[in-house]
Length: 210
Image (cartoon, rainbow, N blue to C red; front, side, top):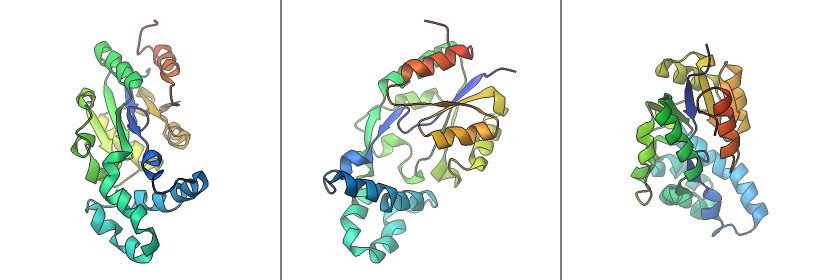
């Protein structure tokens, strides 16, 4: 059987998510930001994915451990919504085209339970396109995350798809490779890569050639 459904990542595929822009205020030096994002930020991001508890409760031990970094931690705690810059129009239009064609659409995102759906913390943007999805697996809700194999298998079972029936679109190559490892067809999405995504969708018969 051929690919019949598309599974989309959210952040930096359909939704512009860029915490670095927010942290430039506190960390103007690029090297300092790079060190922060590879260390403390990643740690905070992982911590909030492991529980449904509020950010403040989860991050409190980290504040005690690293009092000098409290401003950086509280930026994450109180201004997570400022990391969101709204829908990415190019891919949302592709999503709409797939919907018109009747292609089943699903989501699979590494996203904290506490801030899902995005309009809950970012009412300034319209995320109505999320209604196009038949189902969305959110890592923070199910307690699994990409690139762990179990979340892909969980998503396939929940969506009622065999691996070869799904095309998975993600901006992180490691997540695409992990999906391919369980038999899903992968597409590595790059910024501004709408035309390449359309080519892949056309090649699998999910969109008509332009």
